[in-house]
Length: 159
Picture 1 (tube, rainbow, N blue to C red):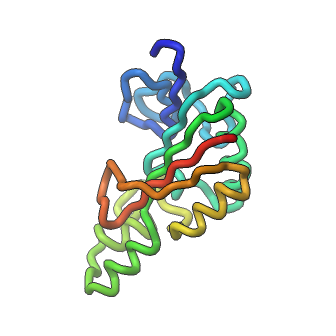
Picture 2 (cartoon, rainbow, N blue to C red; picture 1 turned 30 degrees about the horizontal axis):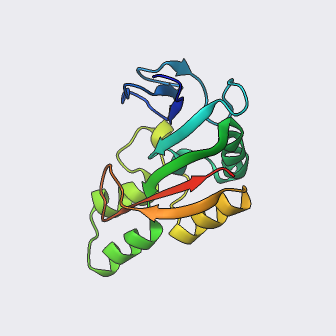
């Protein structure tokens, strides 16, 4: 891993080499609830949470983002990928009504109860949340995982 510390939050069974894989289940390096991680302040250069944020209850999201910011070093980056309400609505308006296109994005249909979705965020809602938490350089990017036409990827930097 070198001197760079990268945290893969919500890793589950997707173990990323060169990252500290953190989750309450799966092939992980640190078994922890991602809402409160027992690591030192400013220990990480980068955080990635791929299809994790939608599983966190809305009442916990601001504190969770503050926790992740606590873990980042100054100028550290965070990347989030998740279903995007804007894209889901576009798909719906284009006539897509399948469970996999709509139901899974909105609700986590066909997933075990622990993997159900608590919310489907719009791009602006995530931007506003990250800005409120004090992140800067908030950018929309092309998603790397899952369904790019349905999902969003947003990155930001801790000042």
